[in-house]
Length: 242
Image (cartoon, rainbow, N blue to C red):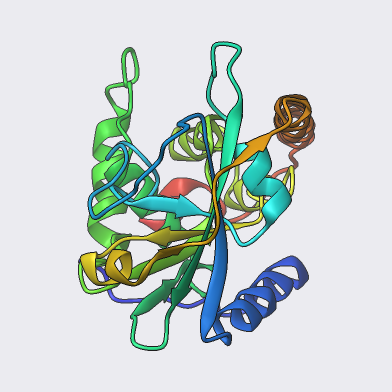
């Protein structure tokens, strides 16, 4: 497992993210939101699909409007989505804040946990293995992980970087397209034991499905424009970091 590498010279957007997360984590009790198509959600330890950014657990956001959009982030077959509200006392929890760290740590976590279809691109397996070996952190000791959210579009951007199609700074810009904000991942049994539901599930208006699609569409269009307009960089390809 890798030693922790922090960001040496955070950009202005990165500084803003770090400041926002510091402000969030300075609170003793966090209020968090989870959007779901499940009408009767009862999350517990090892909840959810392991094929997600940080593995099995509960993915939440501190932003209520994003939580409502997340309720429609998967196909609901015409049914409503639901917003769940939680509170958690983090005073005695160990939190890994990926926003302060080199983005290669985030990428390694993503590549380690998500299932990747490499049909026709088997050569990428060695590169992925090298990234994980060099940058994957031991997250077993943490109760909560805070970091970027990667829906399927954003995961595509990560694979583009791994394949050498884009530069690292293009990837880092893409992570902020669409203003998905950060996610707070409830990971350990200790954290789940402290998680408290607040009120009942809110039925989310289906206009949030349109909001979600529009946000994703705008992010993808911005990414494609940035990718097309890339100019030559020095030491910004994936192999420069291995």
